[in-house]
Amino acid sequence: MGSDIKVVTQKVIQIIGFVNTMFSQLKLTVVISSIEIWSNKNKISTTGNPNNILSRFLEWKYKHIFRPHQVAYLFAFKKYPSFLGATFPGKICNKNFAVGVALNCTHKDCCEARLCVMKKGKQCGSGECCTLDCKLKPIGMQCRKPSDECDFPEYCNGVSSHCVADTYARDGQSCNSGDAFCFGGRCRIHTKQCRDLIGGASRGGPFACYDEVNSRGDRYGNCGRKFCYTHCLNLLCGKLVCAWPHKALISRANLSIIYTHVREEMCVSTFRVTDKIPKNPWTTIDLPEERDDTFVQDGTVCGPDMYCLRFACVEAQYQIPTAQCNSTYCNSHVCNNLNHCQCEKGFDPPTCLEKKGEFGSIDDGHKAPSG
Image (cartoon, rainbow, N blue to C red; front, side, top):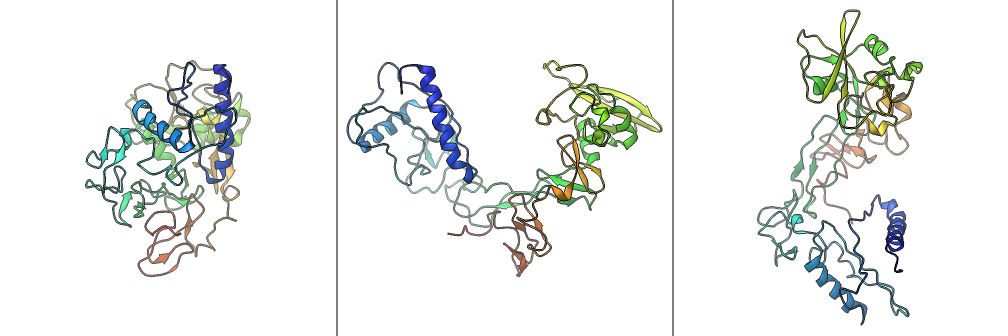
């Protein structure tokens, strides 16, 4: 691959980038954990047939690679190669051939920690669906509780030692008795965000508070861009402004607070104090991705059937991919974040037809994986 370390590193990065273009359809991303370049001499012999080279590399890996990772690859140059590569077919996820570290085996009685391989006769060595005696928990056993009314429970699927991926209500689903929206698996309630931030009996500020505070365009009142006060429809989607009913002042670590009396309300806005110097005196941030907890959360109601999204107030109906999953297809049940039906008790996924004893979705693990 060359003798220039920078060039070699760049080539490896380009290769991983190409690999990711192939895996993107599966929603998988390959991330480089570390790169080791053998610049003086090879650490193993790269002569012989591919199976022998692969075995040598596997042995070397167990003895010398200690950084957290999942898969190790060796790139070796051959002038006249008789093969392009080698692997253990179907074994990349097999514990005996994986390149995990001892940390991946949390049940000490199940694994050989030094080699990070499973002991003979053991089914698993870590995960929410692995028992302490190294057996897979039965299908249908709950492994993750819902954390919110917009979140759904998950169950062991009887195949994996780890809980299935988190499932939750699709963004834009109504919650809190129709007064709020689900977003990112949480019911985005204005008052709840205020109480999480400043406590007490605080509540979401009325429009008059937002109109006064978020029209300032300073670090305590902005929509993340200069002169946000000219975009009046977005005032409710910038800095979080709360109503404070107490006489006592708010005391929170690393939180700078201003109080503004508007009509009959004491309006409170905050600024998170960090070591980072603000970019300018007019606005704290420039991009939605840089927001902290002192900004209104995406999914918070900002008007009739509207919620905040990246500083804008948008109509919820236009943000929901109803062509992929909808109430009609799901027999009046809701859709999850994977655009599959989430059925209530007594209804059977995937389309929520009535069936005693059934519930959930095809994603939550309570049914055996198909195929």
